[in-house]
Length: 270
Image (tube, rainbow, N blue to C red; front, top):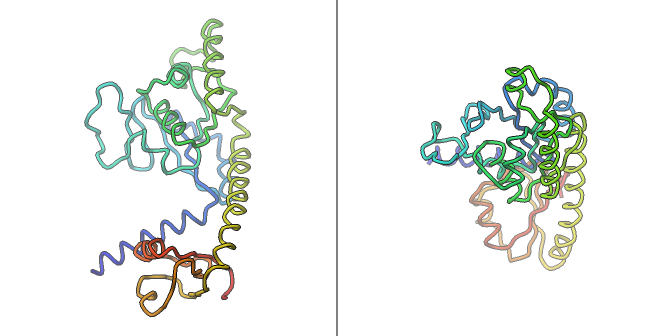
């Protein structure tokens, strides 16, 4: 019993932390050192209260996000090395946007033609299907970092470069945005903060309409559970005022949804 309550509270805290952020994005880097030039941009995102994760490729079909090994399904992949890690196709579900600082000829071809089989192509395909925004660095040579190191070449031959540019154009037609790498953080901040303002305006109107139809209840403690509702009388469309930062337990959320109650967070006590 105690264990389930603790787990419920911890899950609620995690959800609340995510809500307090202005959004969350995922950076997909070619290797474990590719993120180093983006330190200043990460600082910008933190200052804007935007959360981000970093995923590092380990080859074309394997990658790491934290301690989890994320793998591409590939052509014949059935059993994952890390059974608890999400697949590449599942990754975008937890993010508002996907950031690809550098893309190469191979992955650009896969994305443009709708093919999967690599981490980048599957993440981009999934993000497109889920209508997440996708930002890709445009000032790239089109050659993988590992290939540049191996071949000692920093640019594609002209025929390959023309083909790469064609793929970039096709990706743009799919709704993928290309921009200089140095501007990635600024565009992320503009997108998420603007979206937050629009959503806030859209949500305010129905709240005001519902408030006029129901009564108001207020709760001032830090954790709202179903116990509190047992001593209260309420009807559909009633509004519960909560202190900003109050944690709502999953069971309480289910009760609120089932009874069609409105929840409004305020900075001061009502």
